[in-house]
Length: 533
Image 1 (tube, rainbow, N blue to C red):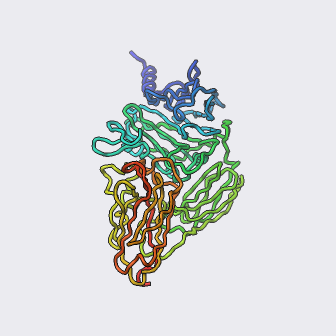
Image 2: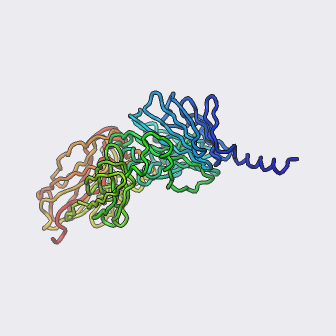
């Protein structure tokens, strides 16, 4: 018969409690026991994580290991215990410009990480990818939007259609970087979270509104991502240096932990490229002129770093930034309304105000908002999480009648070979029949798509193809690119008192249907005197 002490020992083992906090080295593995329920193993040949045991259950996937991209390949590894407070594993790739760090703390079921790069990594992306056991963690980020089980790929290798005609894609799990400090996957007994605290994104590229893959649910693996750099709707060059710190945390259930993760201890660990708080500065001030119904976002960037924050009642203070000279932008939502420069000095908070320079012309009518987002337009509430051909989507194209229709009646995207044109019916008083300015804002173009416009006998000049972004956009849930705005002068001779009709189409060609040339609409307005003026 077992004694009380033996029963207690077995109970502890059943919960996954192993040895005290510590590092064990074998011929081919480093094994780390956090003494917080998490035990993980790192391959000494290549830096891959090969085991993730939490509370006694294995969560590492059965196929490929977890790691950077598809693995670092042959690497030089080292491991050390520092002051009994930290275990640090360093993996320096032999053939890639990448060094990966793994850090553990006592009683903490978290793997703290950082990734140092000195050049681009094929195939044009840099990501942390945890391949986890789907049967233990079946729920992905945003539920089923990235769940491809039982579905068939119909566009590339990443976009799937299910038997109920709903669509799935790992890109549909993405969120804007400015809003994405934490995301995770979960099951009945545990959840695993990626946490990107503070300035984790400072050496990434794309700005505050960049979005990228967060998870994908397959029949065997549940993939959990953090994208640092990618070629998905890429609008600026990569930055090099230290990505992070970031972390992967295990919890007993799906309750989201705080994203306010303290990583200041990295300053004691000799992490290449790490800049401690006392070597940084900040910017604070007032952002003015953004209407109260829109977010006011302030963005700083140069070729070494990027930062952002949201203003509250006009006031803002930046994250702690590396010293240097930065371009400083103000956005109304995601629409740029001001641009300046600022110098940041270590140990100082620089005062710098910024004010919207957006003009406020008189308009005959406006559809949507110039805010850099198509979300208020038709299908705009769905496009981030499903394909344009999804059964849940509304029709494309259509007719909008000024004074009767709502923004939700106007399509958020137009395609050259499917969906049809968009028409706008509007009335003009005699005093409004004069030369007017038509303005069409777009947020993203594909295959050179740009607006074609016509009113009566007048056809607007082709504005020419915008700068190419060589990436599918709207079909993978993306809506933000360079944000072109097009204007035409509509001559009075094209207009008449009473009803007029604007027809918007697409210049450009390309493949069939939703992969033909297209553009995403931000807003459309006809500038001129309001009726009675």
